Length: 318
Image (cartoon, rainbow, N blue to C red; front, top):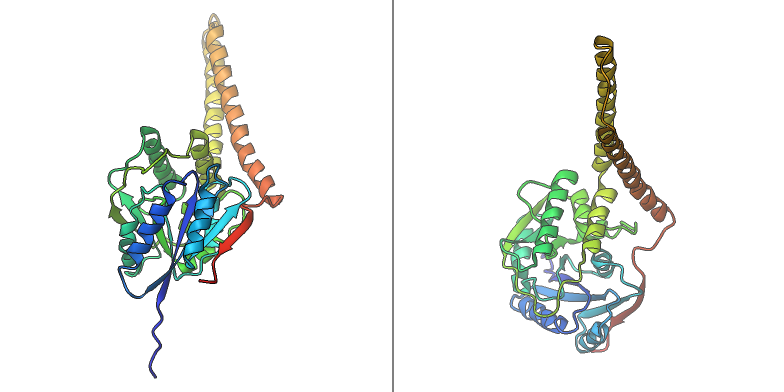
């Protein structure tokens, strides 16, 4: 019996924020790239993360001209991680591709990622040997890499970026995560370790600047290790235990020294204050760190939404 051949479908997810001047060119490049190879249909999901510019009007115009485009508007700025999951919830392709809206992701290398998937991997990330980013963003990327290595047991040699492709089953498992603190790399690592890289060139930004501030990057890091690892809590516990043993040992030393030399006098108010302030800081840090975990548990129990979609644009009449 002859097996019917089925054309594969690609779903491309683009979170949009302050990209009214770049989005159209990114979409055009994606469409032109996909059309270069037969055997693939496509869907492009554009997620407006409550951008303060006119990007949603750009999305409306693009969706009106192409039936393969889907526009999504979120009720407020939920962040890139949540916007990606919102787009993935509407994706129906066999392969899900995610990339940025600023033109820095080399969309013309899309099939390089897909071909790598076809070799048996479940997720493939673009690997940039040279990044066209500010020193601050490069530091943020380095910190993110180290965090995944130390806390999330990242496979050796694998690097992560915002331009990646995953198989449908990986995306389906990712969107099952409903807590309000998503971290997509952590989600992928919890689903599969069959991950690879493809070397790509990181382009210069077409227009504007990155929307990531230090606080936003810090929030992403916190999402990563509070939602997917308990190693930080263990580290805090071990560190507290070490400090307790150190204090106990120092106390024994003072008592022994006094018994051996009755004329020994402990002098040094400033040193005592330094030790006291150090230990107080350690305790406050531990309490704050533990409180961060507790507050996130509380927020999750209250079922705070990961994202809220207010409008979906589809042109089914072309």
